[in-house]
Amino acid sequence: MKIELSSRFRKSYKKLATKRPEIAVIALEKILLFSQQYNNPILKFHKLHGEYEGLYSFSIEYDIRIIVDLIDADTAILLLIGTHDEVY
Image (cartoon, rainbow, N blue to C red):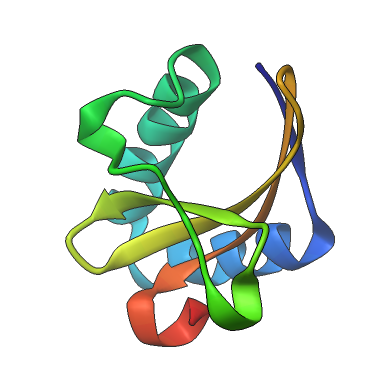
């Protein structure tokens, strides 16, 4: 799957990498896994509801999530990364 990064994602990833560099490395590994097999159970990939209807999320660690917009079967845009409270 082709992965694109929104400007908001880039900014939030940079903030995460500054605060918690070890999590930023794990995030890159999970993004690579997502690009190869988005429905891998490790990612806990799921649809969102309410304000985020039509978007998806997957887990990096217990409290770190990435919000995703699936454009089509081969393209996803990563919109935001952060703690549960930061992204929802």
